[in-house]
Each structure stands twice: as structure tokens, then as C-alpha cells.
Image 1 (cartoon, rainbow, N blue to C red):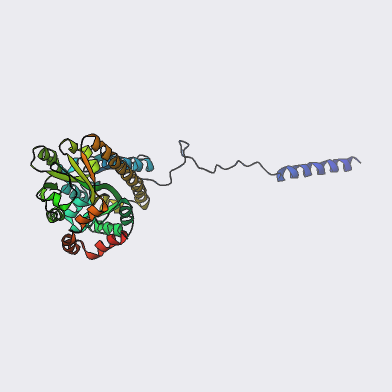
Image 2 (tube, rainbow, N blue to C red):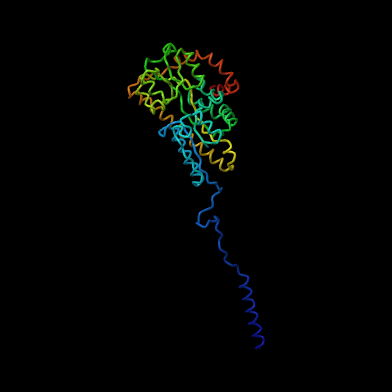
Length: 354
């Protein structure tokens, strides 16, 4: 009897030990987001530390400068502060020369810039297509052309010049001011001495309208107007207001005769050395910054009209019929410059207007 009881107790102990050994163990729940030593999630990409320089032609109160600063801030934010871009206004890096500014971008002396296609056309006349008179009549056509086939062709020409385009900002439509009389017809311009940028197309254009065009650095314009060396000048509205030309000009005619985009360019060698992830950061930041700069520039332009009226300027808004009288005189300009800029490129812009 005792032997049977002892055997039974031994069997119960064995079964109990077996049951304990087979019971499931509580496992710790794995952390779905591995942490670094500081407890933060690891970044998706590692970016190199870089210090880059960006040049703009205009002052630190301009929409150009503000757009460039926006771009710099976005790149820094998207790279956790590892890529820093310092923005220099007023062509400080090129001693005031816009042409030299583009040359520095081509060679890599400067890393990035905002420059007008007018200045690019001094280096390559094909860029002058955008400035042809009344080719782009309004902002809707501008946006469609530069976002489409025509803009792609401009970007391809930039690549040939060792510059990668990160998109377009704008200087805006160019208007004309003077001290002699209201301009409504081509006859009103006869003999008037007008300062123009130093490219031949503008000189030829104003001669065709009967004016006396004078190429001059913009830094000399205010004093030349003040001293009656010239009668007038042409520029987008934000430039006219920020340069206080209303202090030395009485009349302004709004005729949108020539559109002036700016290019956010990066040295191509620098861009090609970047990882695909960093290239995408630059492109995304540029798209947002360009949209911001364009919006700011257009808001400033709209506000400028009322501001100039308040300063005592006589503001003339030309009708479609009045503009057509100027356009009718542009045949010789298009005949000459179609060959210079290229028929295929010109037609791409014309298709965007339809």
C-alpha cells in the first residue's frame, strides 16, 4: 500500500513539472520604431554638411531676395540644418555685374543664383525669346508656357551652359515711364530717349517704335532721369517702386510689352555630385520657393499701381486696341529674331498662347 502511494505521488510531481515547462512565456513587445541613443527616430537619409552661396541681382527688400531666403530655409529644414545656403543681394559676389554673376554660376565660383533671362541672353541669344514683344500677353499664358514645352526647351539650353534649372520665378511684365508726355500710341514715343537693358533686341524694338533707346547700367538710371540725361525707362512695377523712380518720373504706361522671368539656377557639376535624395530636396524646395516668390511679386505689382497714383504719377492703362497699334510695328523684330532665337523655340512659346 505504501509503495503504491509513493508511486502515485511521484507521478503527480512529474506531470506538474511537465506542465510548467510547457506553459507559454511572456515575451517583451518589440519597439516598432528603433531609436537612436538620444531616443529619436533615425532620419531616412544622411545628408552631407554643405555651405553654399546664392547670388541675386536685386536688393534685400525685393521679392527675389525673399524667394531666395525662402529656398535657403526650406533646404536647411529638409536636411536637418546640414545644408546651409547664404544669400547675397545686389550682385555682391560679382562686383555688381549680372553677366559676371552668371559666368560665376557656370564655373562653380557661385553655387546658386536668381538671374533674369534678359541677362542670360547676353551669353546665349536664345534666352531672348522670352522677352520678345507681346509674345506672352498675360500671366495665364506665362504660367502655361514656362511649365510646359517652352520652359523645358529653355531648361535644356541651360544644361548646355553647365547650369541646372530649379524652376522659374519672375521679375514681371515690363512697363514704361517718362517725364515728357503720356504714351498711348507709337507716335507718342517719337524722339523720346529711353533707357533699356544692354541687349540688342530691346534697342532694335524701341528704334522700331521711333524712340531713341539708350543702353545704361541700372545703377545710373535714377541720376540720369533726375538730370534729364534720359526721358524715361522701362521696368517691372516692383522695380519702379523699390527704386523710387516715381520721384523722378511723371508718367507711366501699363502695356505689358515684355515679360521677364528669373531662373533659379544651380551649378550643374554641383547638382550632379549630389545624391538623388539631396537633388530631390533641392527640387522640392525650389518649387515651393519659386511659387512663393511669384505670388509675392504679383501682389507687389498690383499694390504698386495704387501706390504710384498716390505719389502723383499719371498712370495710363493701354487698351487691347491701343496695344495692337504697337504690335503692328513688331513685324521686322520677329523677322530678325526668329532666326536668332530659333524658329522651333519661338513656335513653342507661340503654341502656349493659343
